[in-house]
Image (tube, rainbow, N blue to C red):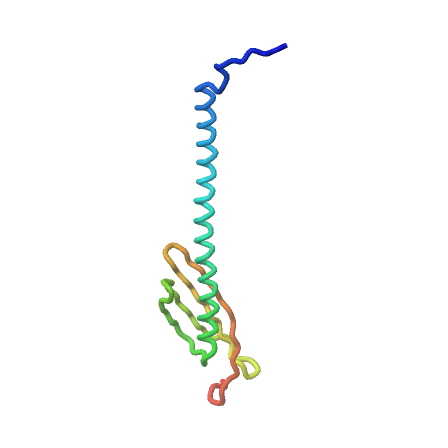
Length: 125
């Protein structure tokens, strides 16, 4: 048996419109997720920069003799504030608490650490 060739075979206009609409929805979801991924990546990259800056600032400030007080500055577009407070004196060492707050636009990160320094001759209680 031989089938007759139908010159009218193919997709209807409704089928093409439905496929186009489905493709538009899938692409819309994909583009939205890509946009959100880029925003999260940018925020994560900024937080990484802030963490590296915090480490650098704390090491830089703690390499000198620590003095209680507040230091502020701006580096790489990030505002920072370092608070140094004295803690207890025990066994010939002075304890200092360093609290660093970094701000950039609406993102704020806080870091803190403790440092121990030997007391100099004139600083024993």
